[in-house]
Amino acid sequence: MAEAQWSTHAKTMLEERRIQEEWAMRTIQNPDRYEESEDGNGHYIKSIPEHGGRFLRVVVNPSVSPKRILTVFLIGVWGGSYEAKNQQGKRYPLFPFG
Image (cartoon, rainbow, N blue to C red):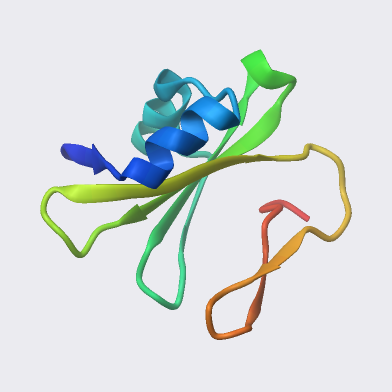
């Protein structure tokens, strides 16, 4: 992915969630999985060995220039249902590999 700009929220989440910026950039550059949400945002997902194999999800808005990193968060490595709701109330899985 070409250059990207960090949103204030994403930078705050890096700090609060103790996520290294290098992990996020690695995730964007070489994701294990990529998903595009209904709102057009790209979700880059990658296992992070340095964090026990948990998956990092990096959400990017590709519609602006430069692309904007909106948020980052870690999700578990175990099975189960991890869901969230988008602004329209539609549920979507957080855990990418079921």
